[in-house]
View 1 (cartoon, each protein chain N blue to C red):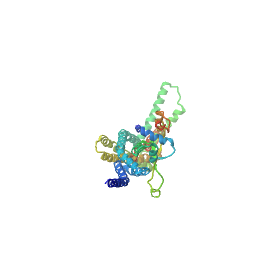
View 2 (view 1 turned 45 degrees about the horizontal axis):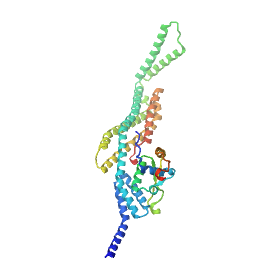
View 3 (view 1 turned 90 degrees about the vertical axis):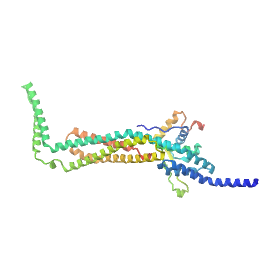
View 4 (view 1 turned 90 degrees about the horizontal axis):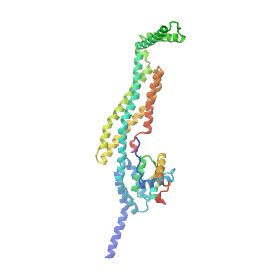
Length: 104
Length: 295
């Protein structure tokens, strides 16, 4: 049975566009917050939703919190499937990938 | 008086500002405690890290409040996905159970047929006699329709082979079962029996789980209780799927020996089909395994 795709709200698309800018690189949630200007309570549920749908892969930053003096970051990256779906979703809106209308 | 008031207000504001960080931490802890249990540890670490990157306490407070506000959305996302997985399991499990049983049934039938043949020389003689009779009838028809016809070398060879089979079958009278069925084949039969029993047990367990899944699907219990019930079922199912997976891998240890008990190409093909079906099932489970950890 095909899984239902995650909801693609305005904010969700904004998060996807950030991840599509550098699909090879992992991005921390806090970096997405900074780039989108959205609230944490909006971004993290979106990231959780996309990860459950397997559009995103995530892993902890490789560092020892005690040595770094701060908690580890959780790093997110589009999965190959997520990359294709995110591109398709943004293309459907006829917006160039990596640059959404509100960024103009 | 005005000086005193402004002094008091100043102290209160300073004090309140000093308490903002502990308040933010408390709000994060509060929000995390409402997130589903398996995500809590991760959310605590990630959200705290994220708050730490914000420029000042007032902004941190706004973000901390937004975590609390996001809890209903996180819960509803979780519930939606869990319901979807339940729906999938309700549809998939009966199919999976029968897919699991069918190859073993076929393998078991082949084994029963083999044992019956190996332990009953009368059957073998009967088959050989029937074959001999069929060849003779064919020759008789041919001769009747054309008395001048000659019997070909191939027909004579066929006749000799049929007679030879009869002779062999007659010779096997008196052999004990232990001589006919080798020790190796016996081991194989035991293995097949064991795997088959295990496959049936898992298939039955999967079918028995359907009412529990349906009950949970339509349950209106409190979110936390529902979540606990879901995780329990999800972990049980994960165990069953692991057992299925293990079983499908174990069959590869049976397959090479299985070739030993085959005596014609058609049977070998059927045996191989049964094992291939199990392998396909195993591969599908590996790639599409429902997992509690993914929730």
